[in-house]
Length: 188
Image 1 (cartoon, rainbow, N blue to C red):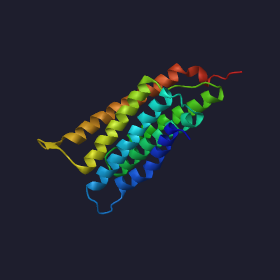
Image 2 (image 1 turned 30 degrees about the vertical axis):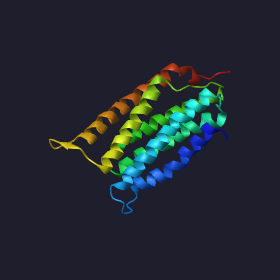
Image 3 (image 1 turned 45 degrees about the vertical axis):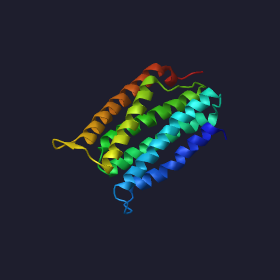
Image 4 (image 1 turned 120 degrees about the vertical axis):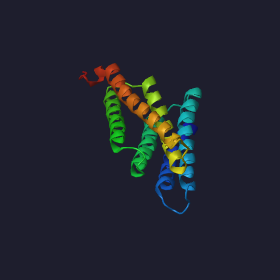
């Protein structure tokens, strides 16, 4: 297994630890969400790093093409579901985000069946960046608040970034479907 694939698997292995520290009430107080935040950031950085290494050193594999996006989806979806449990994010937003991921994954499976590779779009990359930023801010808000004039600025910033991520989620879905609508046509 090459280094990018090891980083991808490391990201998957980090997910249960991330979830445990974010949700477990183990007497660590505010340290638990900080530990989960650190784990999430490390996992997110491995996502960026594995792709760069794979492209730079020509280490792209079929395993990596399959597992890397799956690991990303598992990390982000786990975080979003935990944040619903912690009442930091409304469930309807998470449903929209996860539904988009299922639609695109299904779309990619159909394309792969026709030997078509659908690359990540600019909108998809923006979406992922804003989703991860929103998750980081929401987890940070589990550990601390920054009240100015009676307003929690961390939470307000997290909400703004979250709604931008939601809009980008919809835009990226429409973009994928519009650019690749021929994939859905039956091909002989």
